[in-house]
Length: 173
Image 1 (cartoon, helix red, strand yellow):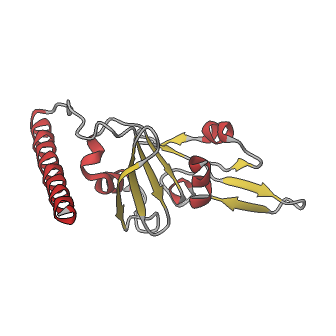
Image 2 (cartoon, rainbow, N blue to C red; image 1 turned 30 degrees about the vertical axis):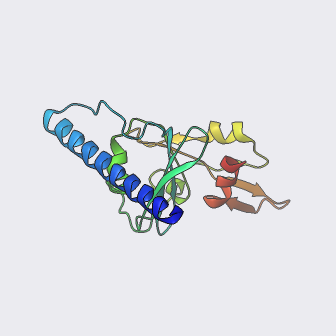
Image 3 (cartoon, rainbow, N blue to C red; image 1 turned 90 degrees about the vertical axis):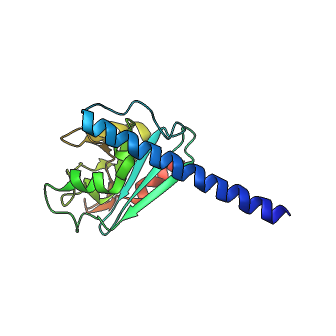
């Protein structure tokens, strides 16, 4: 009985999400036709859209105010697959209906490299959160902020750099 009830609850939740998604899709279509902005957030528990945009793929996450991952999306839209000048379109493709959410967006990874959307200069180590925040750069159209990578130079000045997964550790801590 417990398994059967759990299955019914899961099915009901999936149906509810499908209905919410369809209603939101209809609302966005209406907004596009009338030239207005969406008036309702279908994801009220979402506080931030976070992106891990690497060399071969891009991942987007809807996060709660407490940092809980509510949903995720992934596409083969890494910096080596996106042509120069096409990053905004790739972001829209990755985010889908999340693109209309008026929420802060932050990205890390190769998207901030010389081959990415904009080059975000490395921050010297040791670096604290304040240094990373000071190093944030916004994309030219204001679509999102990009987190800088980190650089450590040895005694001879040879750089050792971190960008992407390594800088995500700061967000996790």
